[in-house]
Each structure stands twice: as C-alpha cells, then as structure tokens.
Length: 220
Image (tube, rainbow, N blue to C red; front, side, top):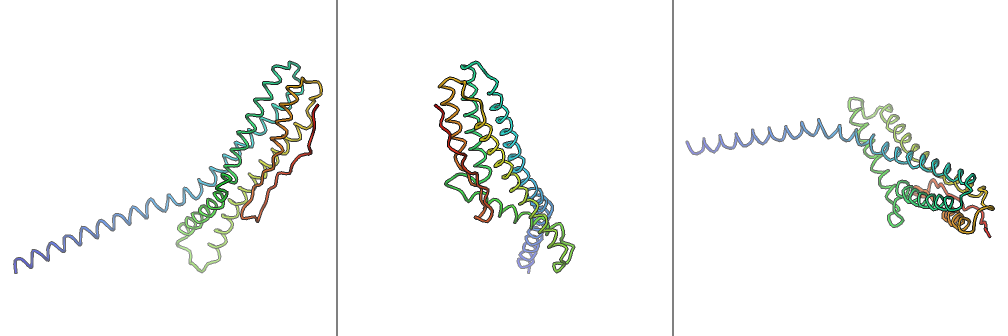
C-alpha cells in the first residue's frame, strides 16, 4: 500500500506541476502573443509605407538637384553633379524596386508579405473583437475596412513613387543641356536612358502601376 500511495502522490504532483506549467504558458501566450500580433499587424505595413515615403522624398530632392543643373556654367562641376545624380537615381530605383516589387528573381515577395500582413491584421482584429459575436457583421466590416485601408496605402505609396519617377524624367528632358560640353551631354543622356527604363509595380496583375518609357532624345 505504501508503494502504491507513493506512486499516486508522485503522479498527482507531476500532474499538478505539469498543468500549472501549461497554464503559465497559456497565460504568457494570451498576454504577449496577441499583443505582438496586433503590434506587428500595424507596425509592419506602416514601416514599409514609411520607407516608401522616404524614397519618394529622396526622389524629390534628386529632382531639385537636376533642376539646379540648368544654372550651372562650370562644366567640370556640372559633370560631377550629373554623375552624382546618376548614382543617386540608380540607388533609389533599386531601393524602390525592393520595397514595391521585391527582387526581380523573387517578384512574389510583396504579395506574400501583403498576404501575411492581411492575415495578421485579421487575426489581431478578431482577437480585439473577441467579445463580439462571430455572426456579427460589425467585426467583419471593421476587418474589411482595416485591410482595405492598409492595402490602399501601399498602392498610394507606389503611385507616388511612380509619379516622382515621371517628374524626374520630365525634368531631365527639359534641362538646358545645349550649352554644356560633350562629356556632360553624354552623362545626361546616360541618365535619361537609365531613367526611361520601364518599371512595373504589380500585385497579382490586378493593379498595375506601369512607368511608361519617355520619348527617345538624341544629344549631339
């Protein structure tokens, strides 16, 4: 009887400690995981939107630098400024591609991230609205509106970058290059060619933000 009682007590202690540990894990899960879901559901898309805004403002700064080339009569300094503009444009274009469509060989990065973000958004909203009946239309409307708002912000950021690219092309096209030396003209033509490379920001081919090629310009 003593051995059986000891075995019973041991099993009871193991069960109590195990259930207590599981309850503690569930408490940590309920306390932290839900909050993390809600945090990243908001922070992740907002972080990408902020990065797109930074790229957009950098494009505007680059456009202003190109406009200032019109008033530059020092050919050597003018050439260096054009080269700096070319480098900045290449780096910004690469960065915008990574932010909006991902690497050319991994073009599905953005749709995957958007899908994951939408999933986290829906999860967080459902956790937040856990007290509302699952059959209530209110929780579905809030989830849908929140998801559409974040997705629309992504497309708005892409459209702003597309407009900035078009504005830079127009500025280069209207630059008073005819009084420059040949080296500066060739550098400007190189930048115009680089700027005219078409970019396409797409999501499952449903919404396309195509950056059209500018007219070809020959500088002699």
